[in-house]
Image 1 (cartoon, helix red, strand yellow):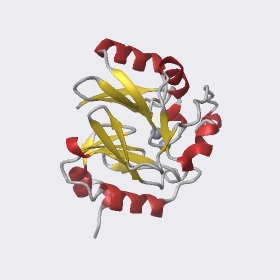
Image 2 (tube, helix red, strand yellow):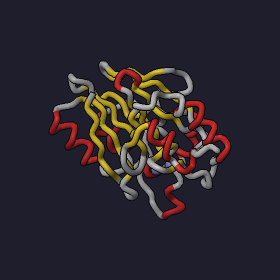
Image 3 (spheres, rainbow, N blue to C red):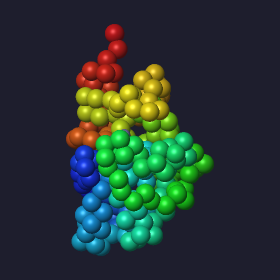
Image 4 (cartoon, rainbow, N blue to C red):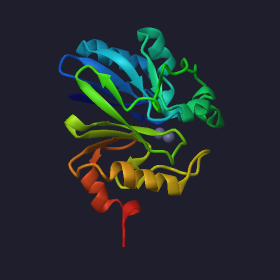
Length: 208
Ligand SMILES: [Zn+2]
Ligand SMILES: [Zn+2]
């Protein structure tokens, strides 16, 4: 499994391009700069089959429309984040407007996994940062793409519309901390980490 991290868009949000050995790829959270995604795919001769969205904040969806126009990829999103998606992900509050992508073709409450070539992403429902947030876990390669739920030494904000601290903590404990310690965590912002490191060192997850 090949994982490329591209910090894109107004906040430098991590977009991940994840490909199997044959070059069949998913684009996770393209927050802007569609040209960079397209160039990367072309350079590697990878063929993207899906746009997977962890949630619908503007900094994770800004390039969806352009990528969809260029590549006709189905967009996958949890339906509870659909109103946020259709309203531009809250970007207007920051004066950011962009073309909003097509309605998602794949509803992530209805399926347990998304197959991308040889890869299989389990959909983990992890609300709390937004109401329809999911994470994508590739169990065979011990990797989880966690969006804005769990970061190195941090957790997602819960002060935005739809946020809930109690729900977020329950999502982290039940869906993420139950994964093996050596599971790599690829978050929406900042460096990659592991479940084990965050279980031991993340100040927001300390138990007494
Ligand atoms: Zn977010
Ligand atoms: Zn974000």
